[in-house]
Length: 278
Image (cartoon, rainbow, N blue to C red):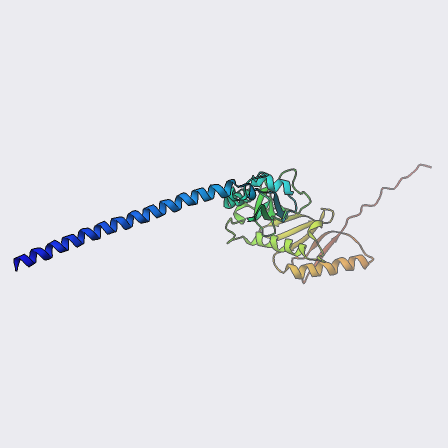
């Protein structure tokens, strides 16, 4: 009985050793396979990134408006003749997005020898004066500080503060939303005050929005809310003035209360009379 016990114990120890040796061989095989695959991958990557067949012979740039193709390529740091597989697409996209005029960018390879860059530029909507002047886009986002080379024929917003804007875009103050409503109306075809004729948007937190349009002197007081209706009333007022005989021009139009529109005509001073002594 004891002899059988020792035989069984020896067999178990032998099987256990064999299992351990087998496990070691399996681990070594897996490690060797992974090492071989890594070496193959490294050599394959080197072959791809150094092969002349994949040299960039063309860089296509789409979506430019203000920026030129050469400016985009220079900012992307894609050199002529570079191997397209050696380009880090993610890093190139980040470099493009760092340009103040670029809102979005996409970079992709076109086999065998091309790079395609597609960008979306910010569309400047107005200049906002916060002590320093900035450009805002059509989403109401500040995207760059105004410099001399930027377009200057945009409406200038005065009376807002940094606290009126929220970087995350989740909260905007009532005055800022009022400004954006007016600017969006000015973008519509047939608007009575297109943005190109709008010089200044003045914000007063108590009384609302006042526009200085046309020659930059005429004031149109809109207050808050109901801007589409107020623009329609303004169209009727201007049409009446054009056809009327009493006066054809104005200094201010107050549209705060649509039930009581106040128009102040242009003040014309009488020319001084010349008298001669007899």
